[in-house]
Image 1 (cartoon, rainbow, N blue to C red):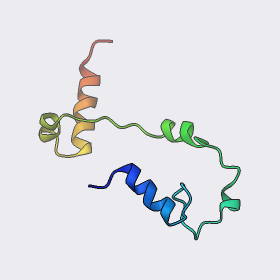
Image 2 (image 1 turned 30 degrees about the vertical axis):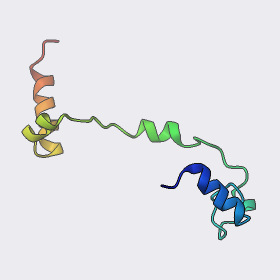
Image 3 (image 1 turned 120 degrees about the vertical axis):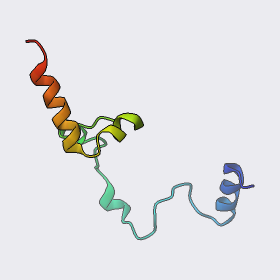
Image 4 (image 1 turned 180 degrees about the horizontal axis):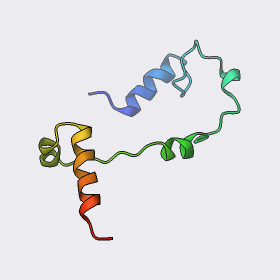
Length: 78
C-alpha cells in the first residue's frame, strides 16, 4: 500500500517539487488570481434543492416538482 509519506519520498527522490502544477502551465500567468472572485454571483444564480429518493420517485421531472410546489403555494392561506 502506498502512503502519502512514501509518495513524498518518491517525489523527493526524483527531485520534484511538492506542488502538482503541470509543467505546461505558466506560473507567471497565474499570479494575481483572487480566490472566490465569482462565488457570490454564482450562489445568487444557483437555486437547487436535494430531494429525498422517495420524493424524487414521486416526481419524475423538474416540471412535476415545480407544478406541485405551485399548487401548494396557491392553496395556502395568505
